[in-house]
Structure formats: structure tokens, C-alpha cells
Image (cartoon, rainbow, N blue to C red):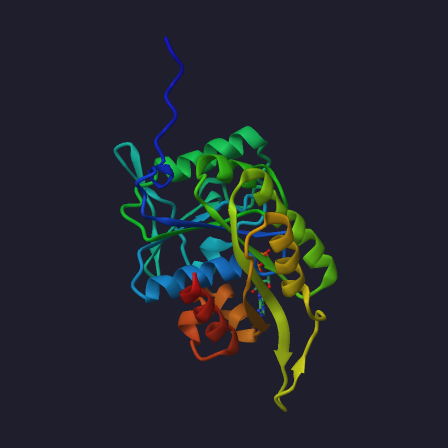
Length: 263
Ligand code: ADP
């Protein structure tokens, strides 16, 4: 008896028309999940068919940000993903009992991701976004193996320390031969009531990561956009109503919508 065949991942087929973006960051707390959730919702609002895989094992927050409170439903051998704001969503958080820490090792993570991609009924998608765990871990490598055509988007803050680790996360793409589409700088400034910009976390991190990744990958890695600090973004994420929908004219929403249309 031979070994079981590898499950087929529709997005990995050469004929697949789905654009796959893996959203990466060097460390946690820079807004990677907020960016993923908002890009997804903005694209769906523009009429694209969008799916999100929350692969941030250690800090899954996509279900809350999108206001999804139920796991996929099982139909025969497939899982039907819940839909929020016209986005199909699957998160590792839907498969662990609430309040329990996730202590999984690499091979289990790889299998979980494989299942998310192969056993979930996504239907035809224009875009699939993957929210990666921060850093340069197993999941980033698994994504590259399972979805060789996936492209990387790096999220960083303007701060030097964040930019340094973001460069490292982005440079995984050199080893895995993935394309880095660009860098998103989040928390770039806080607009004050007099209209001036307070650069709370310094400046230049996004440009620096883009420059470095351009050198490392030999491709053109642009800064896709800068997103200001914005209370509306945080509030929207907390209540499952992403800012691009709940407050589309807010500074963060305008920046995110512009970035979504550039991808
Ligand atoms: P990560 O996925 O990188 O760990 P999150 O997206 O979970 O980061 O963001 C961390 C926290 O910072 C969340 O509470 C989120 O609402 C908040 N946040 C992220 N970006 C912004 C922003 N531009 N303005 C205000 N709050 C933000």
C-alpha cells in the first residue's frame, strides 16, 4: 500500500487564477492582522471574491476583527467557511477550545494549513489572503511549499527595531523564491487636532524595509502605503466591524482602501 496522496490545493494549481498574498511581519503588535482583515473587506467591497486564512497560530485575532463567531460547517468531506462582510474566513482559532493555548509543533501546523487550503470549500476566489504568524517560522515555509505562487506583503511600523525584524521576515522570500509585493508601514503617525503629524514611532521604517528587500530580492519592492494611527481602526477591530466599512472616511480607512486597490 502506498502512502496517502497529498490533498489537492486548488490555489496551487498552475491554472489557478486566484492571487494569493501572505501577510507577514517581523514581530507581533505591528497591525498585521488589522491590515489583513481590512484589505480583505475592502477588496470584497470592491466586488472581488475574497478568502482569508488566519494562520497566526499564536495570536489569531481575525475572527474577532471580522466579527465571525462560528466555525466552518461540515458538509460531506468539505468544510464550508463562515462568511463575514462578504469575506470567507477560516482561522486556526476556530479549531481550538476557547481559552486554551495553542501548543502545536511544525508538522501539525503544516497539516492544519494544508487542510485549510484543501478541505475548505472556497469556491472560485479572486484573492486569498493569509495572515501569517509574526517572524520567520514554520508557517512561512509551509505557505511557500503549499502555495509556491504566493506573494509576500510585509507589514512594519516606522520604528528601527520593528523594521530590522521585518527585513528578516521578508528575506525568507529569497530562500523560498517568493515575490515580495511590497511593504506596508502601519502606525506611521498620529494626526493631531491642529493638523500636524506626531510621529510616535519615529519615521522611515517602511522605506528602509522596502529598500533592503529590493536589494535582497533583486526585485522592485515598493512601499505600498502608510497607515496612520487611528482610534477608528482599533475600535472597528474590537467590535468586528473593520474600519474600511465602519468609518470609510477615516484616515486609516482611506489609506487601507488605497492599498487594497493597488494589489
Ligand atoms: P498584529 O497582527 O501585528 O499582532 P494587530 O493587528 O493585532 O497586530 O494590532 C495590534 C493592536 O494595535 C490591535 O489592538 C489593533 O487594533 C491596534 N492597531 C493596529 N494598527 C493600528 C492603527 N493604525 N491605529 C490604531 N490602532 C491600531
